[in-house]
Length: 143
Image (cartoon, rainbow, N blue to C red; front, side):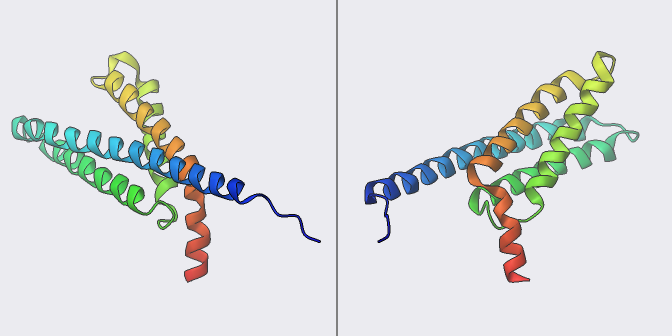
């Protein structure tokens, strides 16, 4: 004799998984929107940059665009991209820690601390909600 959970329980679990996935998607879309806004906002910094900073400002602007794309890809298929979650989280955490260590004497450190810390928290929450670590089993299964 086997014991089965009531079908309502399975439905509730599936519904909970969908809700968690939607919240994760919303967090990733918000992170992508922030990166797009930052990329557009950086156009002026590139245009105004002198020869000493033009390349760095361009690199920064394009980096925002890349991260917008990464966040959108993760929102679309959160369990497909093994390693991308972890690299993104580590990048944003690293930038947060750098901004914290540089302190208020460094231009932009305060803004970076707030923005990158917020994105780090959003990414970690989305990673947990969407079970992003399962991308590794998908990658192993297709290897």
